Amino acid sequence: MSLETISTGDELVRGRSVDTNAPWIAEQAAESGVLRVFHTTVGDDPAALADAFRRAARRSDVVVVTGGLGPTEDDHTRVAAAEAAGVDLVEDPELTAWIRERFESRGIPLLPKNLVQAYIPAGAEVLPNPLGTAPGFRLEIDGASLFFLSGVPREMEVMFDAGIRPVLAERGPGGAYGVVVSFGKPEAWVDERTKDLAGTHDLSVGITAVLGTIKLTFQATGPDARERVDAAVGTARERLGDLVLEADTLAGAVGHLLEERGLTLATAESCTGGLVGRLLTDVPGISANYLGGVIAYANEVKEDLLGVPCDLLVEHGAVSAETAEAMAAGARETLGTDFAVSITGIAGPGGGTEEKPVGLVWFGFAGPSGVESLSRRLPGDREVVRGFAANVALQLVRRRLQTAARP
Image (cartoon, rainbow, N blue to C red):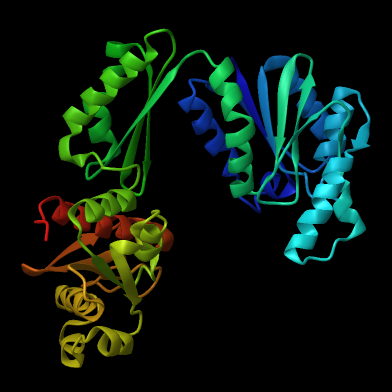
């Protein structure tokens, strides 16, 4: 079975927004053993949209379209879909009632233009949107199944899970998909140790690197696909050893270890501005183990909230081993946790010196055994340095938790 994605919107074509829907859909399809063969991005032009839908229907079995289902003048997807299928756009009375109830229950005034969302191509099957006000629909064109979903990522994901994932599972080629995520060695190092697995197990192997996190993906089709993927995943995990994360993300791995060992963690962040805390709180159920953090950007905040001595800051500076250790110790004491990690550095683009260049970041870690620190010179612009620093801090916590005694 072949799958294609179409993302709609001028904001995507002109670079004002980044498309996150298409990569997410491709990965979900891969997990069902279905590889995406085409992707198209189309602006808010009815004729161009209809043409894209027709072309996709002629060359793919399943087409997933996102965006353009709202009530505004630039939302042309439903009109273009009807044109591509050669049918009329008709009102669905049940959708009209649903939209009215949805607005009423939320206390939002219903404007006449909102009711345009109750119109779908004749013969289409409604795909409910439990999170928003824009329902989707499924439409058959030239033997292909076209699924039209909301462009809002969270809404799209829920609609995909309910309406498309079962279809892929039923009609897919019986494939299998596996993932191994690691941190601590560069992409080339990981690739060198796993590149032969494609030939060994007759499967496709992909590798991606984001801020030091290396993701290996394995996919196979056929009656023994699951066995081949599992064998490749097992071999990769064995070769990479303790570089392999306990979850799909570093934050997830930290959350897993905290929960498993019954331990608590606090954070103290300067240059990352709360990024580590945000990544941790993205992990469901982590509130029992991650108690909170302090964003101490200014020296006065480091002194007042974390107890970093003023004379220490004057003598060694905010970006130093001494300050990182004091921040970690202060966070642990202030929040009453088993462990604490801290970050202080120079993310750039300015602020660097010959002694302390841009990209220099110090990390502190405090626990029952004492306080320690380490530094890294991280490459890249401000955003990359901050993102990489957050991952290094999480990896530091992960490593210490792996050997931590349970209370």
